[in-house]
Image (tube, rainbow, N blue to C red; front, side, top):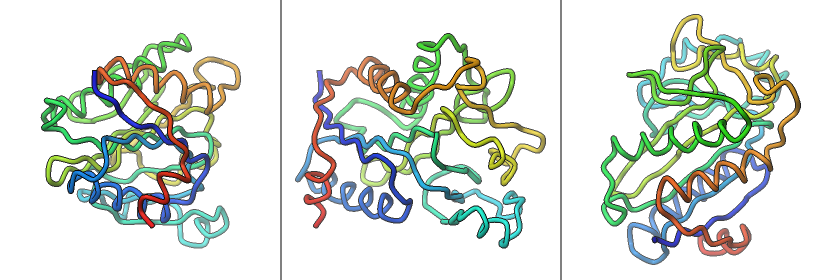
Length: 226
């Protein structure tokens, strides 16, 4: 069983989290650190993947400013995604070759983590061919967007736990016209905390990836990149 370090960063703006990911990615490629998975919530942000269409951001700039939503183009695959409080994000920095994974299986594993985490709350999610993520009959429950360089991963998954519903319509999820985003709390019919979802997702991550998760302080991880 592989050991993967886990650092909980709490709520963090997208820019600093992205910089941290990229530095950890470089250190992992150089062999200076083991595999790491970061768990966190973001302050409001829209990211645009390599295949993204800015036209899928439906809100005008003044509305984004009113909601204090940042916008970042990034190197991950996929289209436009919204992140914000009430959403669990996992960023694994994993060496796929050492883990015996190819990209297809890696994406499948991330989807499986969300599907199993949702099941812990009595919600049955599934996959939709051609549209990575976790889906429910009511809408999109979770997103997957990854980038791999030198066999080491960047970005990851985002599971909607208790997102503010007024911010869902800011984008076209996955670029699919008419697609809706949905949260675990809505499907369960009661509030679900990000902490509870994180515990469920990390347990699923350990099972799916055959990993032993070793907690490490987020400040320690940040010092590696200083």
